[in-house]
Length: 159
Image 1 (cartoon, one colour):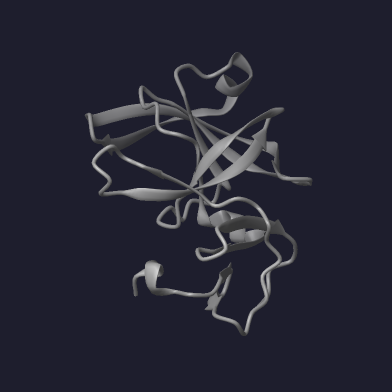
Image 2: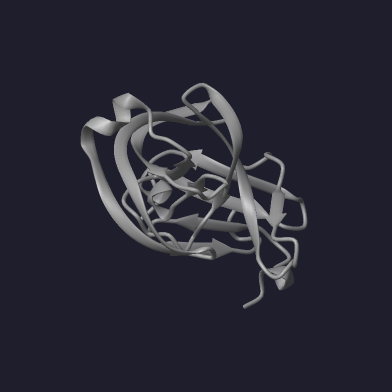
């Protein structure tokens, strides 16, 4: 199904997703889409506040990591180096070995905040931070293409 053909909102929860007029959305945030220059890949971007800084993060529904978010950085802070491990990955630039540290961090979506595990990755990549499907353990994702809204609502997920 192409999402461009969906006329009503989509509501992702831990157990799956609902769409159409039957499910009212609680969403008023702006829908922002990022794309590669070629335009062949695009992402929904959500506004996230992490460690006091606000930025856009890619909503990556293909990433089912247990951490709510993956943050790429050129160097890990000394406090993150205490519990570091090595991870191999394949990027557009080739094979890369990264240092990774997971830390419980305050993550906010608008006025809603949670403490959740975040993976910090020492990487050459300048790709934006990514929200993973682990966000569904804390709430839901809602968007409506026709109204141009996108939200992450922190609450107990519906069964």
